[in-house]
Amino acid sequence: MEKDAAIGIFDSGIGGLTVLQQVARLLPQEQLVYLGDTARTPYGTKSPDVVRQYACENTDFLIGRGLKMLVVACNTVSAVALEMLGDRYDIPVVGVITPGVQAALRRSKKRRIGVIGTEATIASRAYTHALHQIDPGVEVLTRACPLFVPLVEEGWVENKVTREAALVYLGSLKHSGIDTLILGCTHYPLLKNCLAEILGPSVCLIDSAEETAKVVRSTLASEGLLRRKGDGGASFFVTDVPDRFVKVGARFLGEQIESAVRVELSATTNGKGRRLPR
Image 1 (spheres, rainbow, N blue to C red):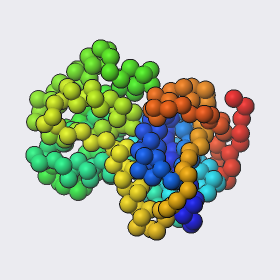
Image 2 (image 1 turned 45 degrees about the horizontal axis):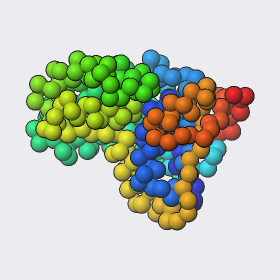
Image 3 (image 1 turned 180 degrees about the vertical axis):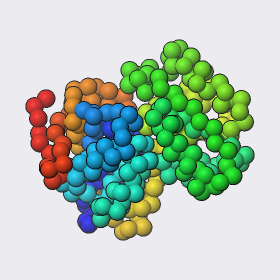
């Protein structure tokens, strides 16, 4: 692997752009390649075998772009396929669950931690299992917040509708005695201001995207793969509707995405994919 090789990041859709944003912030000299599997989202409703198949197809495509590290910016894939990807590919692989879990356990004093996520992520108990694997005594309280994803993608991050939804979702957690809350969906960092206002300063919000970026940086440093100089940049690929990706992606990154290339993935593309018309 070469230091100038790219960092590959994939998600089932758009939310993983929060991870890309944090990686770019910490490592502005790195080349990033993002794949959003927008044609097959959401992954949470798929079987584990299908999710693993999609994960391999996504990774094969990104490997074809020349990678030194893979970042799985998808909670579902991180829960059911991360170990398989690490065994199958000869590059470092980082997911979004463990970094957030480790940060929450470091910061929680009461050992009472909340987790919010999509219905699929909460039903999988991935965060609960990961927290108990490290600290069996920690109390974990979870809440599915299904409206947050469409609200974020609509750009409604701090308006009255979003605040009312957050009040309903977080009401029980606010009075449960948690001192730490894991944002267990890559869309949720865009709601941090709203969530912090509702929960108050006694609850520490854990941004899994931010924590994942820190692990990416430390892993590259330990492997001697940090790019020390040069201009960084990002290229974007999607499996459907690039125009919507470009439009909504600007809300995640705070800047315009110039373009996204639509590709078709399959088990036989050997990382090359097939470019499709917009």
